[in-house]
Amino acid sequence: ILNVEQSPQSLHVQEGDSTNFTCSFPSSNFYALHWYRWETAKSPEALFVMTLNGDEKKKGRISATLNTKEGYSYLYIKGSQPEDSATYLCARGTGNQFYFGTGTSLTVIP
Amino acid sequence: ETGVTQTPRHLVMGMTNKKSLKCEQHLGHNAMYWYKQSAKKPLELMFVYSLEERVENNSVPSRFSPECPNSSHLFLHLHTLQPEDSALYLCASSQDTSGWGTDTQYFGPGTRLTVL
Image (cartoon, rainbow over all chains, first blue to last red):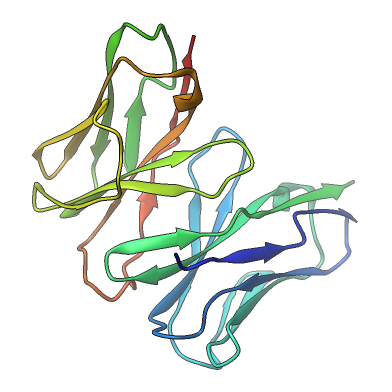
């Protein structure tokens, strides 16, 4: 079992604050790390797929980094807005399977 | 319709019922997946189909029976379920099962299943 851990489990921030959360995964036989954003009652939405050690990806105010040697990825949100409220999932991709973490639930307070 | 759709969005069934969940993808993908999410647990892969052939079955009880008649449609047939099978069932698709875990999977909104 390729355990993927995410922390914190939940997070409340004020509008305008920047925040970040962590995804930890086994570093051996690494192929890819995926980040998803999941709003309640909607489909999980793909944010990033990262494959190389040191990768940095950015999409608007959201960015992510990857360290495959130590087995972690950080997701950053700059200047959080209420519409950023969602659960953020990471998944380790290997073979034809994804192994998901339990997610970080972010609430942005106006 | 675009993306991945699932019907029904909510389903309540008794333990002796037989029902089916439907998934349709409009992305031209070759691979489709069923996931289960129970409360406080990660998304758990149940089945993988590539080019309509099942390539992965993660020790799922036989009361769950998948069917993939073509690359756009995926069904999950349910019979004699247990209350602990109550969960959110998500369908996903990807271009391929590349074997490298790099292909993005695109998800439907899920079916919320309650077994009484």
